[in-house]
Image (tube, rainbow, N blue to C red; front, side, top):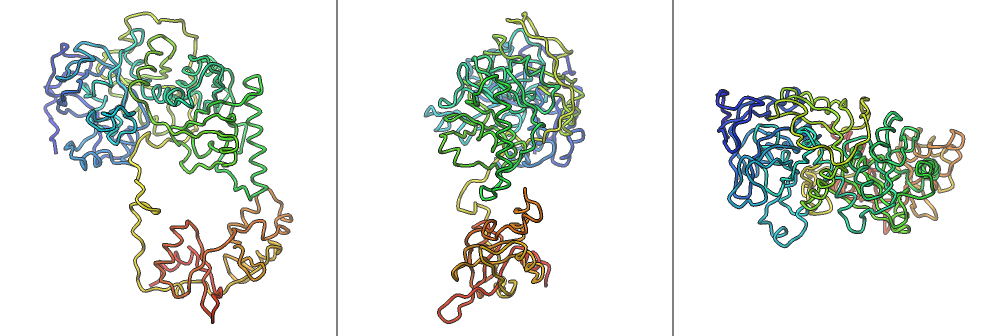
Length: 595
């Protein structure tokens, strides 16, 4: 592992740039180490490290300012990905992480093959990196699909939280001359992500007069999406969490705003067989759709829904999207297990598109909008070099302001770096300063498991300890018919201490009613109505059986593969397999504690 150099006298003082082109051996940096993983205020520590060497296609930049993003909150926590261990596994030696995935600065050195920038250029950096020798990249495919794609300053080391940062030459973009160093450092990650979502997919690309629904309109991503949509003549509608954000979103170009807290139908979509629950959800989502019409001033649905909350909002996004329109998503800040009513997907021919960061063309196009003055960086707060841990702690605690944040690295003071007036007049706007109540998003990027089998690569089966199903099952099967009232079924469960009742029709098992099914049946019904509901209306249809002599390891694997939590146990009696009991997940939990 590389040793951290302790001789701090050899690194340039913070805010005192060496002459352009002169590169010291050492530099100040904010580092994260594995033994400090935890809250950012403790995980980030200031150290002196070697200035990184560059390759033939690389550029060394003296960092003037760095952007603040969620990904390095997660790097500081060491979860859900230990970025240091991941790089060590790939052969990189450093036992520390220097984060930072947004930057503005001055080019100090270029590799032998670099022609796109030169020493002395003022640049900002986008965070997409890839291996130029990758066959996919060589073949002209989108490098975002390359297995070599990495987010600079999160999945790669030597990001912008140091006096010097190493980047690939194609990441460098011209700094807008009218912006300060901190403004230029704050918007590239979210801006390029939003651009690809709105304009990077040919079948989904928005155009003039399209209605665009933007979730989180006052946030970093949302503020970029509103402006990009307006720049092409579309009509963005912002979804916000507080009416105090209306003026801000309207000043960015939104044609209307919707306060999501006026609705309560969020979350996973009720099962379509849950008629009461689904009916209640449908009432809520139709009311939300009406709010879109009211905000727009006409009865038109969104051509594109700009998604990133995920689990809580996908059912609504898919429903309100126009026939033939699209939902484009880049994150899952409320969770990953989204549900949709597939009828609206195929019958209304809607599209659901995943999107992640951006390629060079898209990042450059986004930055050109900023250069022309169409894209305000929406920088809400800037911090000094010493306050870098504090900026990430605010984000970790969900107390950061809306918009984008930046930290001074090499710039000696705030407000420096602008060398030209804004190319177009800006509306007066002030960012909302309320404390956020939105969930903390997981990293924008992280390794996902491949699909090697139905169970995934890490599924190793269960150890066979010689235990049979007969040893762990709940003996006895209690039955009812589809016409049996739930009051009788519930009494049977309590009296027999059974968690499931098998539903039988014409001597055939047609389903199973579990305690969970009864609880779900209570949604939208009074106690009296629930008692009179029939078993056939709430049962889980069908059943999976297992022989009483089957090894428990096999039975567990069956439930895991089929994603069910109970099996009907049968025993061969003559020429028939007769139900004799139930094996449930709770039986396995109980057996785990038994010797």
